[in-house]
Image 1 (cartoon, rainbow, N blue to C red):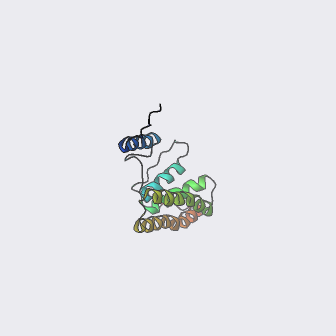
Image 2 (image 1 turned 180 degrees about the vertical axis):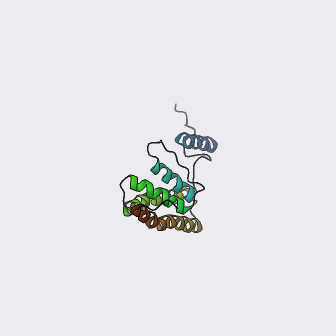
Image 3 (image 1 turned 135 degrees about the horizontal axis):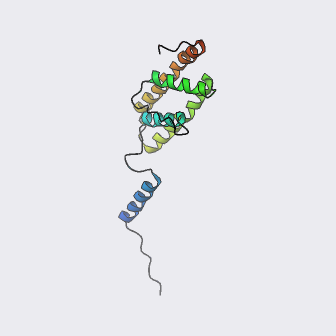
Length: 138
């Protein structure tokens, strides 16, 4: 005689899902779901691949971010076009992740894309100043 197999309760299923998310690092307040902070964390990771020079960009202006990125790119032998192309990947990833999390409203998307564009728009200034060797005042 076979005993009917009982299904787990919805609460048990929810608890198992929560545990799996926590184990994978995808649950809790430490997971960034807003576009600009997520983008900045991707840029921080890009600048500090080896973990030696941890940078924090949370309260930094787009102009200062562009300056830092331009200096980093030139130290890595990247051109301005190469840097802009390197920033396209985290930009797309942010759009996809925030869209999947459901946090990317039309207004937040416009604000994020504007923020990204401000960074890109400042880059020619810093690349030209480094070429002329006149970046002391900036």
